[in-house]
Length: 243
Image (cartoon, rainbow, N blue to C red; front, side, top):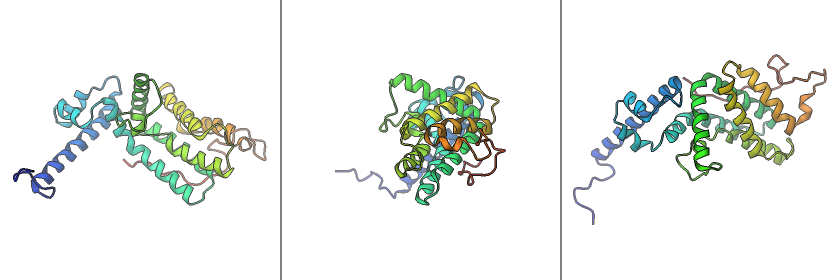
């Protein structure tokens, strides 16, 4: 039997506690976004984020059990709009080649705009992958790959395009999407001065070289059809997080 003093869900004390917890969580996410985005993965500790958020380290760990989980939650808002756009493009019956093109370009712009944060996320992914010695587990709620599944939007589009016959069936959607995203994340670290347009051209050439190679050769013999200076073939880009 519950105690007569136990607060009900609508009790003001319950609401106040929930509001306080939500505010603390938001403060930690904002502090982590700023700290990881300016100092990088290796030079940022949970204690640094907690101090910036104005809370104790114990409180930070109570909300986010690891630095990997915290960064996954920070990066997640950058990923969700891409997945939403992919789902919309599929429902609308849009060309998957055009949708994939826009997704890759949007992702390249995000990685360029939030380069230090992206490099931090890549470091977190690599470190966590080594720790668990395997691919992402959908039930692992502290794996940054699960919390911010960057390849998911591309996987949805490629899988649909392969199912309809617009894209070649090999490589499998999950494999090619992960390969492309990993290459982009790696280049965000190793090629800090590379423009998002140059990165997108490279990635799209590799991707469509496997999935739809006929797009690599145009009627005028241009062997670089994904240059931004090329004639417009595609629709507007997917939404990105505003700031």
